[in-house]
Length: 388
Ligand SMILES: Cc1cc2nc3c(=O)[nH]c(=O)nc-3n(C[C@H](O)[C@H](O)[C@H](O)COP(=O)(O)OP(=O)(O)OC[C@H]3O[C@@H](n4cnc5c(N)ncnc54)[C@H](O)[C@@H]3O)c2cc1C
Image (cartoon, rainbow, N blue to C red; front, side, top):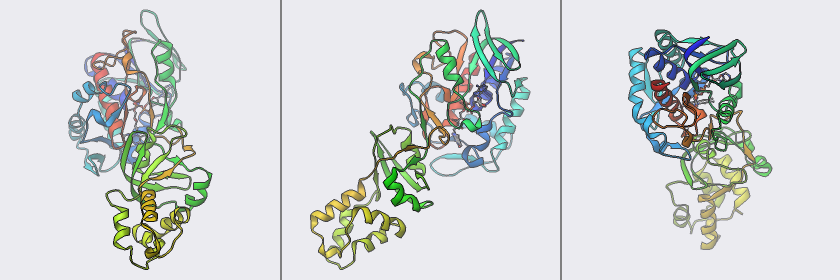
């Protein structure tokens, strides 16, 4: 069967690309091996879909080439997506730090995309496994439902994260097949797992949350840190995980914006026990566990200034060496992807293979937490849809 465009992947970027190409009068076929479209959209943002962020900007994205995302972000803005939602009377709200969520749930966004694909005359084949892809004069896609041909092929298959929702390495494989480079891949926005000793000490604190600043390599993130049964999660840790490499140490400031030494010094003459003072600063369960490792408690008046400097330093620079992360199974995104130098930032088309396009998470562009990854999927899909 011949089409103008085949889009592999009925996720955020693939659907947006198909809609835009369809609006241009192209005949578009979308293929996906899942039984329904947009599975990740459905569960995103805890079921409410954090679909974009009002603080959009290229600085919210990581890539070997930090400039690559600029053109797409300039051509499809948060306001453009909001305008789509408003056309469908979908209500949304700003939660925190510019994050926009559906007021009801993510099914509103899915229903909107379904209607838009119907209006644009998009054909869709679900439960369709892609076995092979090649190019002669046209692209050929061999699937469990037969062979399909098209002038343009858009690879919108996402990254490796959450295989339970249909993620596979197909996009990276197609990229390599056509001789396009793929940068190293790793799970991002993913919880950490404690090493054995920390698990014994802190594994019982599950559910407890603290405001922290965490440093990983040359990046710093401020926000909540959440203790889980296995390790550390919460926004600050998830953000740090996108940069973490095996063996790296996380340096955690447990009192961001405060001066622990100053707090100690104001109480230096008192008979308050150090562990009681720490229990005033932190939830008691945490202060007990942390003090057991770092402090031999005695009344504050018995500490030398040097000892206080040392404890304050540890509170501002608590070093944790995770055993690892929870991996792709629990990662919100995949860091890395098709190398951006291989693609035109204006069209998302391969420089080497005319007619071959990429969109979404399969490309080496990773967003911070907070609606940036879905927005990259919409924006890159939108751009590819103008040319495919
Ligand atoms: C639990 C979770 C929550 C998230 N919440 C948010 C959020 O609130 N806000 C945000 O910005 N980002 C969020 N993200 C990230 C965001 O969902 C993704 O970055 C985004 O969906 C990527 O869009 P995409 O179109 O590139 O890929 P996907 O949405 O992953 O779509 C890829 C499609 O390709 C199909 N596919 C894959 N392999 C094959 C194959 N071999 N054959 C046929 N089809 C194939 C898949 O079935 C899928 O439908 C979340 C991610 C997860 C896992």
